[in-house]
Length: 411
Image (cartoon, rainbow, N blue to C red; front, side, top):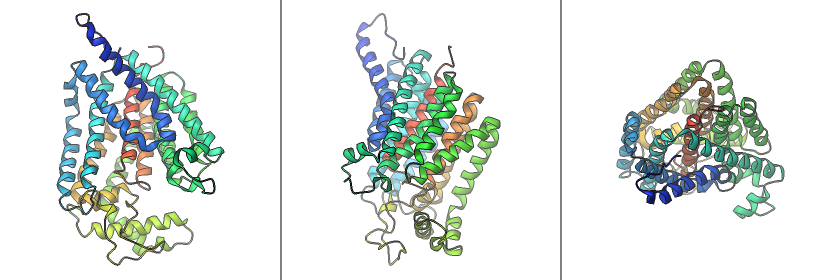
């Protein structure tokens, strides 16, 4: 059991049972939560952080937190920079953004340490509950997409005459499930069901074709390619992803200015409208990032930058230059926290990426597929600090850790 009872203190039984019950409920809820209420993931992240800290304390294993010191030090340095940047950020919610980043980081640290400490039997129980939830979420999403999302319309109060597939309502579900299918696939593989492990992402990819979430399509495609290549050579895929990260963080500003100012892709008729609008947004964000290249405009500044006379081809700019964020994580970090923030973020991402090399070789393709999917979607959609999006990436990473902790086959 994850929370063993002491023979000398039977009073510990109730708290241990409560923690085990909460952990099981959290694992089972992930799929349905992603499918119907993605914005509830911040609550899930806080809950899992509290469960993990309580579980480590009950087991006298809080010392495990020290094992992640290199990554923790980088994240703490990033949080210090973000906290200081509140002083010059124009965003009224800059402080709240730092708090949100902080509890996501705590969830990653405590949750990872706690899951690594679980006995195999408890890990298998939680993995089974997680799988049931993901199956339910993917099935619900597929049925909803085929029927024009009746439950999503009801839950989010979307009128029948509104084309819901064009809104962010089902797209949030799509990108979150695009992350969760990879730890679920790893769990199936650990259970000896390799065929089902490969089929699950394919089923989800088919469901994605029923709506217009190009980010989810890109994510599942990137994950699938990374998985296929990593089955052959995980080292090669890690190297490619590391190179992509290095180029993206180092050259994102000149690259987007090339797309916007030189190639004029925001006016290219052969690109679909949303892609052209992305290019324009990137160009505007890059211009502002170059004004403060070392420390940036301040955390969460993306949502509060004044247009200062800028003109858009795709709509009237009102009180904000950008539509909440630049739709590119690398560019957003450069814009808000400058070169220093980009260097710290790159270090954290590389630590995470190369950490996959310590996993069993058979499991590495699933981890690299998840990394590639998240990287692809973070490059094209959503603000990197949106709490539900950070919560989704945290949940996928923790479930990957849980699946890896689960004994293989009949062990």
